[in-house]
Amino acid sequence: MTDLTNIHGKALLVSVHISRWAARTLDKVATAMVHKDANATDAGRFNKKLISRTEIDQATGLRQKNAYGELIAVLNAARGDHYDHSLAWGRDGWRLLPVANEPGYHKAKRSHKAAFARALPAFVAAYPDLRAAAPAALGSLYKENEYPHVDRIESRFSLDYERDNLPVSGDDLIDVLAAPQVAEIRAEMDARMMRATQDAKDDARSRIGDVVRSYAKTMATPKGQPGYGFKASKIGNIRDTVATMRRLMEWTDDNEFSGMLDRIDADLLDGVDPQKLRDDKSERANAANEANAIVDAMGDLYGSGK
Image (cartoon, rainbow, N blue to C red):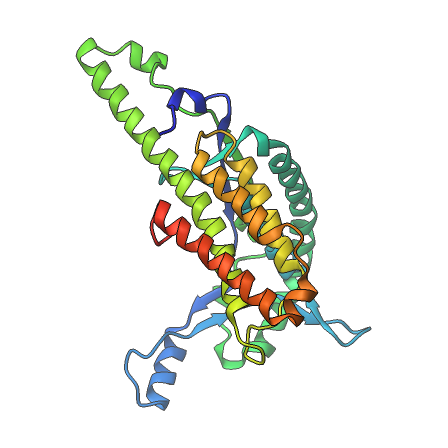
């Protein structure tokens, strides 16, 4: 069990707040038309794409992201890095950021905020043309009132980060309360901290379990079947995930989890040759067995969901 007093100073709380215009909307009329044409009832909903995220490059003839697609990609990357660098914590949007992972998190945050500062004005400038092209793309499905006014489109997007310290049961707010309430409130805070701590551990175990299970599935796929081939980056992804999990879990005393990471390093990663795994049936079978053994061991320690 983690000593809650050991967490303070080793981790902090972070959150990211992202707002965006999705450029999609439910079209009830089109939905009714589809149901009528198919002689169906409650078979689905027609969600209309108001603006495309891509366009044809006139020079190359290839499809590429337009200004809207670039802006959405920046926001998606910001959310993805926020989750990759942190662990689940409670149920209110905060995530746990270990101090060891703070430099990488803030480097990513600065990069995403800079990219957002470039991408948003570019989209705002392109929005009138993107909106003007919508009637031709949507035909009779086009409805002008479904588009934000050009003067308000910028306000539909934001990217903001927030940080806070972990709560401490001895905060001044608690100390000023009447004595009979203090023990109860401190116990409640400690219980919430323990639940959130368990959420963080479960998140880390689930993430490492997912990559090992995926690797085991690939190694067990017979030659010639879909999923047999893999890129060398699949091995790199496991190695990166293990390294990330070591940083993310430095704040805790979970020796069993550290031992599991050591086992993954020793049994799956040390001296592995991706090409040999493609060509040598016995090597591949051994890799599948080792990966499945790790999955089973994690199930025994943490439950089958990890």
